Image (cartoon, rainbow, N blue to C red; front, top):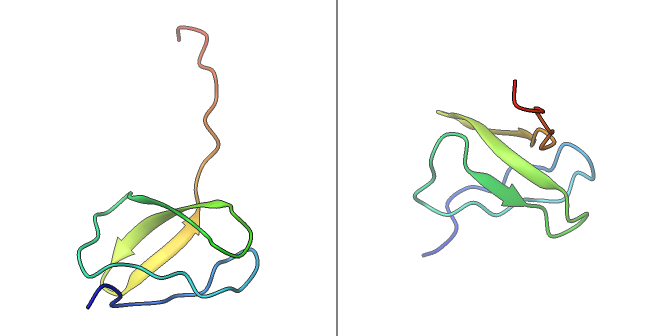
Length: 59
Protein backbone atom coordinates (compact mmCIF):
# COMPACT_ATOMS: atom_id res chain seq x y z
CA UNK A 1 0.00 0.00 0.00
CA UNK A 2 1.51 3.36 -1.02
CA UNK A 3 -1.16 5.88 -0.04
CA UNK A 4 -2.32 6.36 3.54
CA UNK A 5 -3.98 9.77 3.52
CA UNK A 6 -5.36 12.10 0.85
CA UNK A 7 -6.08 15.61 2.20
CA UNK A 8 -7.31 18.32 -0.18
CA UNK A 9 -5.01 20.88 -1.79
CA UNK A 10 -5.65 24.32 -0.22
CA UNK A 11 -5.54 25.96 -3.68
CA UNK A 12 -7.49 23.66 -6.04
CA UNK A 13 -9.20 21.20 -3.63
CA UNK A 14 -7.71 18.20 -5.52
CA UNK A 15 -6.88 15.20 -3.30
CA UNK A 16 -3.17 15.08 -2.50
CA UNK A 17 -1.88 11.56 -2.09
CA UNK A 18 0.51 11.21 0.82
CA UNK A 19 2.55 8.08 1.48
CA UNK A 20 2.45 6.11 4.71
CA UNK A 21 5.74 7.55 5.93
CA UNK A 22 5.82 11.34 5.88
CA UNK A 23 8.00 13.88 7.65
CA UNK A 24 7.17 17.25 9.11
CA UNK A 25 8.05 20.06 6.66
CA UNK A 26 8.22 17.62 3.73
CA UNK A 27 7.48 19.30 0.38
CA UNK A 28 4.94 17.70 -1.98
CA UNK A 29 3.49 18.73 -5.33
CA UNK A 30 -0.23 18.82 -6.08
CA UNK A 31 -1.02 16.79 -9.21
CA UNK A 32 -3.99 19.04 -9.99
CA UNK A 33 -2.45 22.53 -9.96
CA UNK A 34 1.30 21.66 -9.69
CA UNK A 35 1.81 23.96 -6.68
CA UNK A 36 4.27 23.01 -3.93
CA UNK A 37 2.74 22.03 -0.59
CA UNK A 38 4.34 21.54 2.82
CA UNK A 39 3.33 19.12 5.56
CA UNK A 40 2.85 21.38 8.61
CA UNK A 41 1.41 18.84 11.08
CA UNK A 42 1.46 15.06 11.38
CA UNK A 43 -1.41 14.02 13.66
CA UNK A 44 -3.62 14.58 11.77
CA UNK A 45 -1.68 15.35 8.58
CA UNK A 46 -2.18 19.00 7.61
CA UNK A 47 -0.84 20.49 4.39
CA UNK A 48 -0.37 24.16 3.47
CA UNK A 49 1.09 26.13 0.60
CA UNK A 50 4.88 25.87 0.72
CA UNK A 51 6.69 29.16 1.37
CA UNK A 52 8.34 30.82 -1.61
CA UNK A 53 12.12 30.61 -1.70
CA UNK A 54 13.42 34.14 -1.25
CA UNK A 55 16.83 35.71 -1.65
CA UNK A 56 18.27 36.75 1.73
CA UNK A 57 21.07 38.94 0.28
CA UNK A 58 23.53 37.59 2.85
CA UNK A 59 21.54 38.64 5.89
